[in-house]
Every structure is written in C-alpha cells, then in structure tokens.
Length: 228
Image 1 (spheres, rainbow, N blue to C red):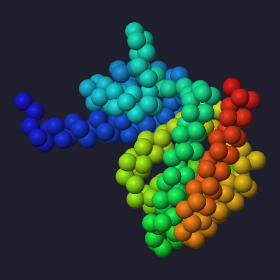
Image 2 (cartoon, one colour; image 1 turned 90 degrees about the vertical axis):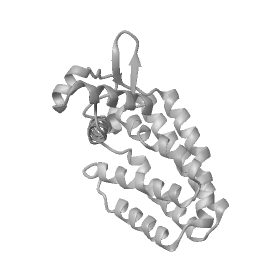
Image 3 (cartoon, rainbow, N blue to C red; image 1 turned 30 degrees about the vertical axis):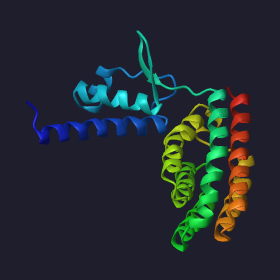
C-alpha cells in the first residue's frame, strides 16, 4: 500500500512530466499534430509509464493535447475558427478585466506594468522574440490580477495558459519571427492601456484593451489565412 510520502512523490513526478511536456509543446519542440506515445515519452523522460499516462490526461484536459479514438494522443492543431473564437473571447473578457483594474490597481502594480512595457521596448526581434512574448504575457496577466475579480482571472488564465503560443506555433511565418506591422502599434497600444489605468479611467481602459486585443487578433488571423 502506497504511503502518504509515496503518493506525494508520485503526484510531483506526474506534474514534473506534465510541465516538461507543456514546455516542449509551447517551445515548438513538439509540433501541432505530433503523436505522443506513452512508451516513447516515458523512455525519453526517463520515468515509468504511469506518471506519463496521468500527465497526458492532464494536458488533454488543458486543451494542449487531444485524444483520437483508436489512434492515441497528439498535440492539438488549432484552426482559424479556433483563433477567431479565442480572440473574440479575449475581446470581451480582457476589457472587463481592464475596466475593473482601472479602479483597483495600486501604484506598485502600475510601476510593474511600466517596467514590463519598457523591457518589451528594449527587446530586439526576432532575436529576443521569446523574451518579448513572455513579457507580453506577464503584462496581460498583471492587468488581469489587478482586476481583483477571481472568476474572471481564472477564466482568462485558462485562455492565456497556452493558446496564444499554440496559435503562433501553427503559423510557421510567426512561430520564430514577429509580424512587423504589429511592432509599433503593439507598443503604442500598451502605452495607452497603462495611461488609462494610471488615470483610473475604467471606460478608457476597457476601450484601449478591446482595441488592442481586436487588432492583435485581426493581424494573426490574416497571417493564418495567408500562411496555412
């Protein structure tokens, strides 16, 4: 019978495998459509099949992987329709978060947002594209956190956990490079979002976030349609 220590160790190992696989997927080392065989993954990661099986189930529940009956588990390939739905959802929910954040954000949180924005401005792309995208994620997550709306934060956390990165990996043109037409507008839109939050203007913040998300989605959808 497995004791408490053994159960905790098993749980940690399962999570370690899940985290490893998630990183490999988001970094593009496992591409959309790639099959993940339980035996092969266990051998590659140097663990038994049990934590791998449970980690695969976890990533299926997260939406990174999909189970195909009688065939196995593979990395999800996201469609143009998926991208449309993702950005349509973000364009509703993130303005809500920005509206609430405008009334609740602290000076320390504004300082952090400004720091993230300045660090993004200093990132040369494509050489530092991964760093830029990591900072961009943190920028949006900081605003979501500042909203002080737990349910909204959890919902947006699920959207942000993987899908923007997964969508980029579905488009070879932008998987390892940026879209030049978005670089200057992205910076300007981030600056306007910060300014509206600093002014504690809920409607201005919501409008700035909505415009930002919609423009980012529009550009990505164009890239997906032009480079299937």
